[in-house]
Image 1 (cartoon, helix red, strand yellow):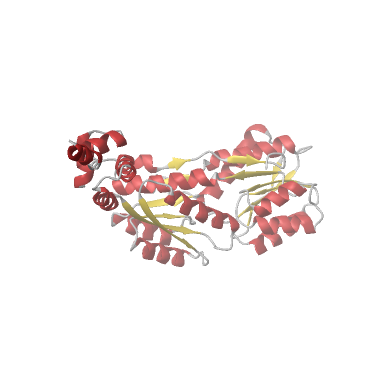
Image 2 (cartoon, one colour; image 1 turned 90 degrees about the vertical axis):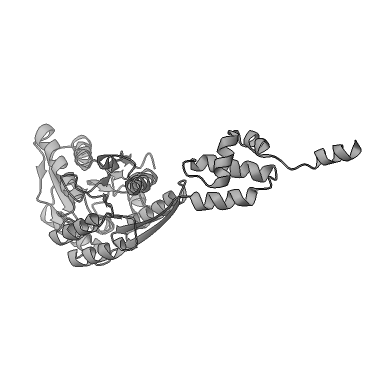
Length: 350
């Protein structure tokens, strides 16, 4: 009798014991052990954790089956210049989002120093060679569009990030509703300026659809609600802080009665420097984009009045999720587009 009792005490946990510990059925445990497809990742992991906890004899097999069953993805992202803080923050958010999904996601983030259409097209084509889906921030140009169409024709999904690639929905888009962004910026000027006056507009490049939509929404608000304001012709910064500095100085010099500046594209660092150097800080209503060190400091010292920003964590999560669903073909392609809500900051809420 003592011999039988000892055998019972040292008996190994059974599959039934493992099922009970994991809170699943015996059939589910058997499917995990055999590596059968169709078991959800969280369920597989729950069985693995329970097997380790009760010292189940087949824990090694479960670990290897789970590793083999875990989905693997390789995505490519092409962003603008690496020296720009916003794109550094976005790259970091994308890597973090990729690390926090129930799959193995290898995300390769590259930056474009040379923004020429030829270089952009070449880099996109090269990236697509090793990736299951790519996401790109770029100005719209026939050379770039042709390259992206070529990539898409090979079965590699292409996404526009931050700026739409097509007005027709040919390429899914992940970003803000830029029409609303422009109208929100206009609302700020109309309600914060002490009196109607001239407003300067600084754009990066009209070929970026987000900036074009920003300006369109901006102008539509004034036509509808505040026609007494004078909107000056937009000046292009070509996504360069140095050119933005020069354009800002020119605006302030040629229009000493100016009431505000709308920075709807790249180069905001140069704009802030020019406003401060010219002695206009705190005297103008200035609206710009993205919360980062330079804009945070400008809000605090009064150089900037308001910042409209992408919610980076949410944007990055939507990007990774959309690319996974596109590769899996798990939904109607029209659902891959994701418009995220924007954030608004003043010196009082940062």
